[in-house]
Image (cartoon, rainbow, N blue to C red; front, top):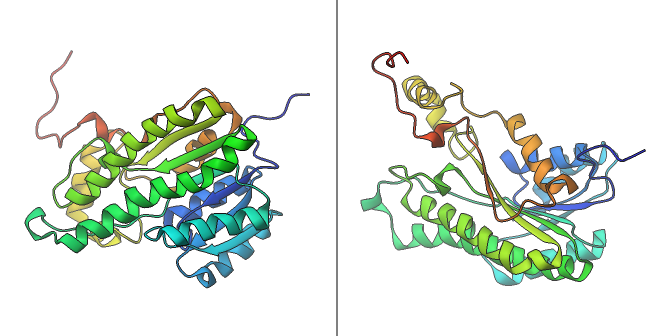
Length: 265
């Protein structure tokens, strides 16, 4: 009998930025699909409770300290995961940050913080993990992007630049490493409530405006990302690489708030 679809049993997944938010949802989804989980945070002690949750599913785990803004930290974290878990089959490049400001107020330090975390950190983490994948002839790299990979929003200039860079980076790495059996894709969520943007969702009028622009008429829920991340991590995505998968309820179609009824066909 053939194996069920989307079975990650026996695979090791390393998810960066798993102390909170979407990183934990990605890790949970991959664990539920059968993968053992390596997780990271700048302070590894913050992962104790989540690690116990994943181990309760019957999965092996490890937790490492990682600051993706520091090259030495990336190399040390990857080496420690490989030491404890034996290898890394799946990388979810999730660690990221944002500083929301009007463009005229963005400082040099703001720019560096965002780009160093979201773009440079994504590249060098992938670079550190890739040699093991290449040696084994197998790997799945999932770079976490955003709807800002393909759309611009006021107040998000450096963030959008970083996420647009992740989309381009994904295509380049896919071309570099595809011959070695390594796929590289970008999973790009739309508007999901996270710790970074929770204050926006306290504004009823803004949420109503947002939902009017989303064809499915609601913000994303964390479970909406479970299937896509498992798909990109699985054997079923073996002929998919260099792609950006938007999970955004359709907001990237360019829908705008309706003021009048659309014309009849």
